Image (tube, rainbow, N blue to C red; front, top):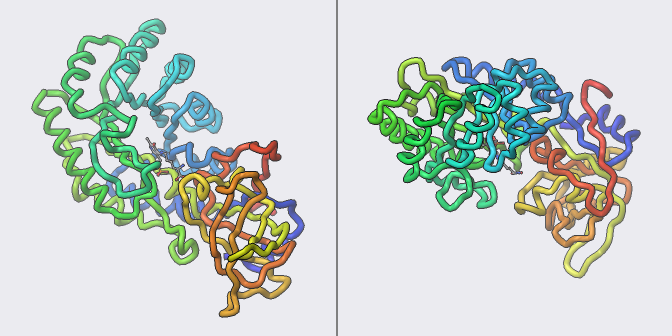
Amino acid sequence: MFNQEIINKFKSIKTPFYYYDIAVLQKTLKVVKEESSKYNFIVHYALKANANNELLNIIKSFNIGADCVSGNEVKKGVECEFTPEHIVFAGVGKNDDEINYALDQTIFCFNCESLQEIEVINELAKAKSKVASIALRINPNVNANTHKYITTGLEENKFGINLWELETVVKKIQTLNNIKLIGLHFHIGSQITDLSSFKSLCLKVNEIQSWFVSHKITIENINVGGGLGVDYHHPDENQITDFAAYFKLFNDFLELRPNQKVHFELGRAIIAQCGTLISKVLYIKNGVNTNFAILDAGMTELMRPALYQAYHKIENISASNNKQPTTNNLKYDVVGPICESSDCFGKAVSLPETQRGDLIAIRTAGAYGEVMSSAYNLRDRVKAIYSNQI
Ligand code: LLP
């Protein structure tokens, strides 16, 4: 993916840094728009995946809404001029300040996760003489077949209102004057590559919809969340996720009522492949059974491998030494400088012989990279570099 010209530019930039390929982001957004528009589906971008202003401005320009999970994300959405009517606010623990801020902005919808939260939103809305639009986030108890830390739609997870609570919640809502039920919300997990999990979700949504119909409750909006995965192993060959198949599946399997709108909250599938963490090799050290390539980037810049044992493709892109992959590749544990054994980007990674000063690209770092970075070990925060600005 990186041509010599870009690599030469990288050489003069202080490492580590996040590199964002704007053309890749734009191409991805174009496909998202084309494929979702076929069915009049409404797409919100999940800011939690990457809330970098430059990128948000591009995403917004494709007329995509914002999915936020904190008051500050709502604020960021508003600041980046996502229209409030296209902002949804989810999260299992919204505090009063966050709710008040979102009420003042008159956002499209609060995705509510418990009865107590609904009561609090009603009280706070009443104090402002407002009516808050809400969706019930229902825990559908559908397995997403993904890493357990990023599974959210099972009964054992903290998210959403469980099916057996629905009756009580709906009865209560009917007594509250400052909220209006406008939708149902679901999200079963993240990095889902097996589309059949989404089919199971559709079938569950249909069942739940029937329950609402039998209770004579009209639901205008169905929000099926995000979760569509990307190919971490083949970032160049599979740069853009198969959005066509994804949206088609929802069109094929969701049974919609007249005038019902379908919403999506995609994060990773939009932003992951345009980002790369570029780092430099500080030292090579021979271990007992392995070599260590010690980088100047660590879990502080990309914590997914340490936190979820996530795979990211690692490439030595230093062309000065003409390092093309060969059969003479060596194995390296590619690690960071942080004082934690989990600070490891990959074990036994096959790389051409690598030396101090080589540039290393850690791919597919656009989602849940920069946003999850930390200053642990008092590390400096690192810069973002954009392909259209160098
Ligand atoms: N909607 C809700 C309610 C969510 O909880 C999430 C992600 C999304 C949408 C966006 O999901 P996406 O399309 O990006 O899969 N840090 C983890 C991922 C955590 C996902 C949290 N929720 C990782 O690095 O894999």
